[in-house]
Image (cartoon, rainbow, N blue to C red):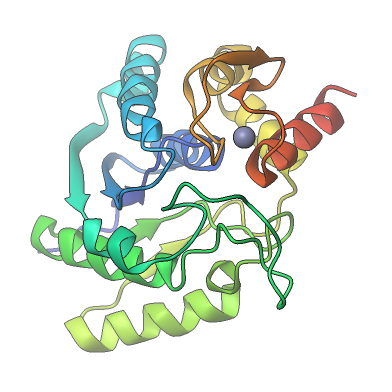
Length: 232
Ligand code: ZN
């Protein structure tokens, strides 16, 4: 039996997925979470995601009551085959195609397949992800067209009608902060600033207005730029 009031969220512990988590808990009656370990340089996000889940449950008990199981999927093979700045200790640069070297080829496609497989055995057909094509690093697997094609393949391949909700798809980073404020006010903003992790280098030594990070990698740049627009 599948239940349309249940959803599984791809939850990395970053700003986007923390905002999606609140969005999902506001909209659905039951929400499970899945995170992927792919030997990412910013593996600290795997610890941060637990903190975000705990903080959200504590500060918003009516949301906490809807939170179900948290799944961790080991995708270390993805890290092993990906020669990228996200999975190796090499400098973050732009390549000839204009993509940052943090692009892990096909990452979202792989994540969605595994998320759908987890959802299948949990009787869930709605997936939620923080993919965004408005204000991102140009990753082709974040595009709506890519995701629509992938969801069609998953629905055919599993013979079930899967849906992917992407509430941030057309929002800027400032728009994502605004959505978080609308959903959970300053308390949610505080949790996202303090506990979510975005920095590709995995840096949490320095605290900026917008949270922890190195302040210089593409992920920190996007997050700080969005924050500046949000508070302006
Ligand atoms: Zn950074």
